[in-house]
Image 1: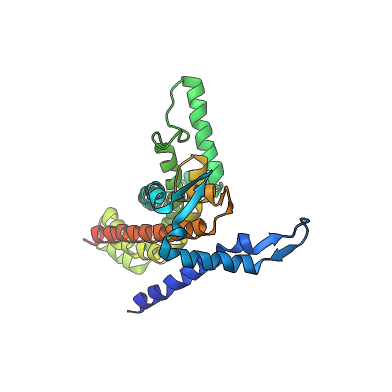
Image 2 (image 1 turned 30 degrees about the vertical axis):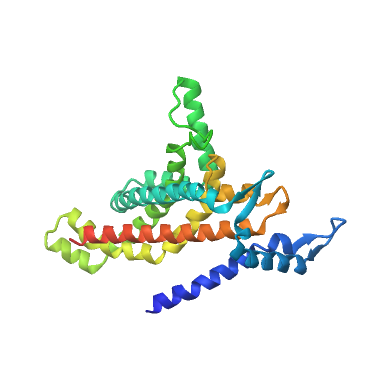
Length: 295
């Protein structure tokens, strides 16, 4: 009951935050001579009132791209599917790989391999993506074999493998480090020693006794991981030329007629919906892991 009330309170707060933060480009502007920063309250309130008034007529769901006007509903579906595919598939692949590798690192003494993973995890997202693209180009120049497509040439010919790998790297690195740390702490508990004394196999101890007590840490920290994923998706979409929600939003936010407040609000709300859908998907994924390892 408390969780439902908390969620119900979060929805209007999120809407108010989006409506407010979308006004910043209109509110904060330089004066005519390019000097001091001024607050344009009247322009901001006019944009907000026009958006609210246009909800009933549908004008709030029209936007300009180039010199043409389009319906937001006609264009957002394809972009949503692109972003959802890379975020959801990347997170599930990355979390699965990170979970298994993290368990291995908790049991292994290969410190050099752990240092390599930590070094790769410390690199910024865009650097990792550029390195992956460079590696594909380098292999193609030396062998003539194009292993992966480095970017999408069009919506009909999208890059899949390399963007998916890039989207999976963040959750994989996050899971590897945290699973290894939490697993080491759990394996030092007294009940693990009792399980060893009973003669249980290491596999049963790890997956049926230790891991069930590790997964709740990630359920509690899931919003942090999703925040990182949502922040990373724009980098992935931009560098791979993917027509996702963030590319759609930032490409047309400043249209032919200037800043499009309604489009930015609708785009940010779409990202909130995307966040909620992926959150539910990952919770179901962790629930499935708990059911499997608790048998």
